[in-house]
Length: 395
Ligand SMILES: Nc1ncnc2c1ncn2[C@@H]1O[C@H](COP(=O)(O)OP(=O)(O)O)[C@@H](O)[C@H]1O
Ligand SMILES: CC(=O)OP(=O)(O)O
Ligand SMILES: [Mg+2]
Image 1: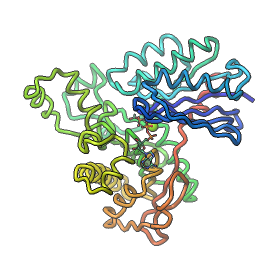
Image 2: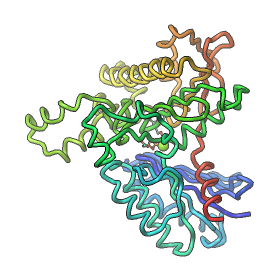
Image 3: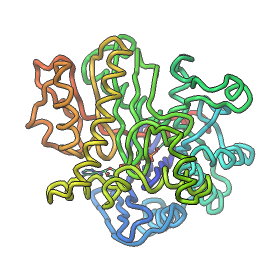
Image 4: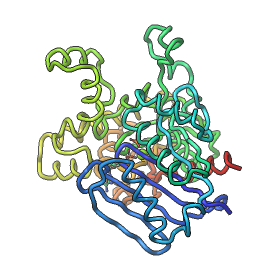
């Protein structure tokens, strides 16, 4: 039995699970959310205890520090040395990594070099890795890349129609992200609908602070909505998703901005936050909407429309779908978003089961029995996937 810690740093959150492997028994699990907010929440569950604290957590380094302290404080581990492996989600693996790898100085350097391609993520991932290296210099660490699952995409999905030598010289192509999550929920959904993964067409809708869809054919990703970086595709918490690139030089000139400022605006000041002027968090958007705030309503509608557009595109691309599955923070919890998406898909013969949809955070079918496509909510579990790969690689 080996104790493995799986660390999943998202753009606004840090999730973790300490597991006994290979049994996959969860010893402790938790979530730090709203990182960067004054009222960030640190939550940990251990045996029957739950501890939750609302504090200012400025960045991921502080979140990691709190985690390490709490593991010892609550005597979850006798000493941090009980942990034999730490697996980290790393968002961008570029063209260098198509599978998980053991972390060496060289690997860490590459992860840091890829920060330009994932500015909200790779720095946070590298911070986590370094923090553990400092406290536990002997423990083996593994990187599990968001990009790996999407390596099966055909060229027509991953190529852009830009000059071909941009691809050859610089690897300019679609990579896609959230792969560990898309893979987990696709596999789980195939089990839930009693079909073998090989014969199943599934559209996975991962909507959290960042969001992406994947078209999964026979267990393989054939298309996904994020691109060269996690900025593309859906409307997200603070990201624009797809826009016309000509907007950039136009606004840069008007606002006297440089390119870093402009890209930062697209990554950090746009999406739900930019449109609503209220917040990047869908819970706050829902609240604004219930108070008839017009910009909250607009942010919500733009968000929903983009999800619907991609589902429709992937339905056609896959030649039909056995299931559509919602996951991640919004997908697992937001009743209004799921309802709005599904009602706009009525044309595909999708019918919502309102009672089933009126739930949060559980595996459940939310379409009626006579719906033409099954629609499910499946909470993602990137952590167990990270722990499996960590065990495989440190053995
Ligand atoms: N109860 C809830 N109702 C609606 N939306 C929620 C709820 N809980 C979380 N969310 C949404 O999920 C987002 C976080 O999703 P998550 O998948 O944890 O993010 P990350 O991209 O950081 O991994 C929040 O920003 C918020 O928009
Ligand atoms: C890739 C990405 O956007 O991740 P997250 O949703 O965790 O921010
Ligand atoms: Mg996430």
